[in-house]
Image 1 (cartoon, rainbow, N blue to C red):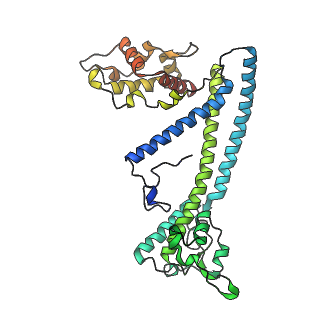
Image 2 (cartoon, rainbow, N blue to C red):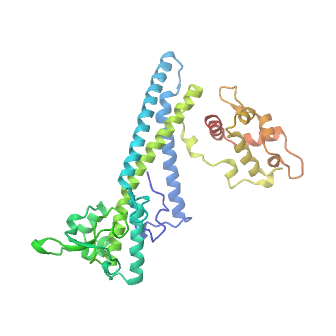
Image 3 (cartoon, rainbow, N blue to C red):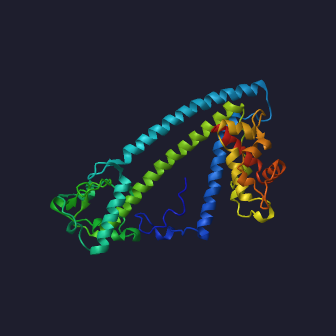
Length: 372
């Protein structure tokens, strides 16, 4: 799953990369958002059709076809239960991986927030006292002399930075990349435990004799690694939950109608509701067209059983709009003519049929009948 193009517009974010920044509202931002939309609608169509094709009537209604659909239905029900179990287990695994207790408040938090807060704290000190100031000059926690490079259980971004100091991206790590020999040739440095400094960020130790500039870079890399790991796990969980939700909707529609239609490309690329389109020219109509179309949408998607039975012909195999009922349910303000009075049923029908495509009506039916 792709990240939003506007994610790194804040240069103060620990993982910010100026070369990746996209200004919100710019041409590049709109192009990136459009690309995301295309990928999202492709995912919507492909996920829906993956399940719906198994339950669709297709071009035949033979007994054999019905038996195949029933078999597929039972298989999808079992798959739904399996997906729900996996989603719950993954959610628990994510909590176990990132959830920690704040050393000061004892409240539940997570390593990402703690890493960002520690980064912000050190970055503030760096700005106030300069990048060459030593970390130990700003904290009085107990230190322990140890082989820091051997003790650190670093995320990949930190390991890369420590092992490749010649790369420009990691040059600010300074002394953290150099070997300082002590007794027996071991690398020993006095170190702070971040937990004793008030942060459970996933780093066990930070050299107390490192500079604030070095620590800021270390924490930026550490946060970036945690962020990437969390995003990967979070996206996996989000995608699994989305597939589960889609499957549940497909099964529910099959339970209601005995059939599920697949989605075409056109049905997943047209996303704008009529009242949201910018080209509406209210001056050409007797009424406030934007308000009218918005109220039509609200009324037709209403899940209240009484309203639903009033505005839809629910006895039909595929419910159609009941225009007498729709006229009665619409707020008078939305049907008010600019010259006084109200438009009647023929005008209501004419405007609805002109501005609501079949994809809109299908979505409204689904909203009203599945959520009602």
